[in-house]
Amino acid sequence: MKVCKNSVFLAIISALVAYSVILAAQAEAPATQPAMKSPDAVAAMKAYSEATAKAQAEYDRAVNAAKVKATEALEAAMAKATKAGNLDEAIAIRENLKHVKPDPTPEDKRKAEIALAKQLLGTWDMTCPTDSSWRAKMEFRADGTFYMKSTITISEGTWRIADNQIRLMKKNNDIWSAELDDGKLNLINSKHVAYVGTRSTGQSR
Image (tube, rainbow, N blue to C red; front, side, top):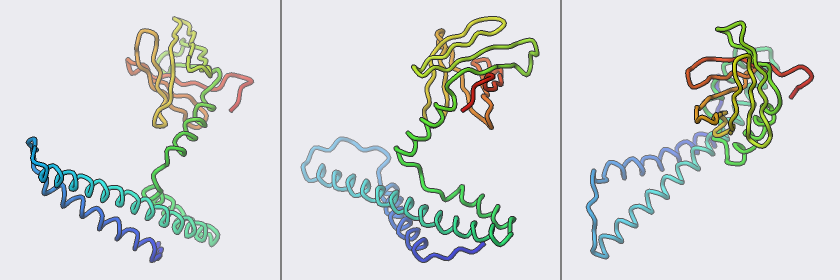
């Protein structure tokens, strides 16, 4: 696989230059910083902090710009390889894409969390792989609460999505985690017991 884009390499070089400034500043910083009172010293430290913050921001922007350009070039190369029937190359490019895709923006994260919530809402038929007799109905509600009635007990609490992770808190403060995988709901309780759910009959997302 060979993707040659001058703009990509220029962006990477710019990022490395900014990063070198950050590393140099970190190497020069004292392990402890006793309080300073003289105006000149305070001003110097303020200027230093502002300069390193600016360098970090420039580095972050340059890296993301490099990721955007590399992603565009790689996606074009992947499409070309796919069209030519070179599936091995297309798969190799796809795997490399995972490492260069730009970081999601706050808006991207918000949209992803909304989409995940829409998939989660509704009723699920739950089973336990380690206990074939255990069954439950679990409902995720739009108000951020959940209700699960099993053959043994009833569980209630709240759910939320943060950083694309599903977290549940029962009323007794037990923390559970969940994920959606290929249309199935994988749930792990605070005792690390796993449950698997499928969408209840008549429901689809």
